[in-house]
Image (cartoon, rainbow over all chains, first blue to last red):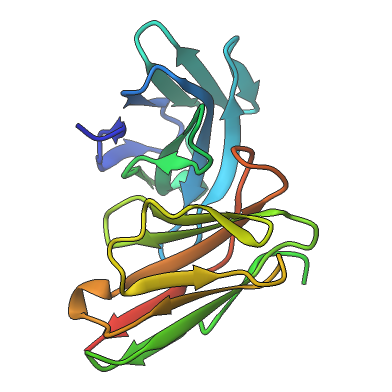
Length: 110
Length: 113
């Protein structure tokens, strides 16, 4: 089983839609969580960190459920520019590197 | 510039050749990571440096891969006897401390023919 698992998609949604992605992680020692965004043929860039209490940044909301070991990302009022691959990223105690999921591809259509 | 810089951006090499990929991290970042990304996959961890030392090289696939960071800044990933399966985008990232936000370079696209 992969340490971080995501539905690869693609998620095809119309502009203005709300879309949610989930990500599960296998190691309960995981302590830090992030969502990165990656555009086609570009490097990953941090979208937002994920805090235990949940956090919001404009149209984006991230939630963490430690008991079920999953992280979610909600995007409201989708824009064409939101089309990208969203990578779930986990850092666990004792492992210095970030572990990435395979990514979920989002395509927002006009 | 202020970001992570990787050179070359593209490298085509013949099977069996040796290649070096360079990464110049953000100034002051002590943590440096190498990842490899194949099409449709997330970045796969290769090696992590804290300062000059390789603190975790558990992701290196075999002994053909080696990386150095002699002065705690620039790092070089070295691949010997390249194989077609080594073709991928090699990403370098740096962060101020381990486990915090990592900033990526634009990657080196390696193609082994």
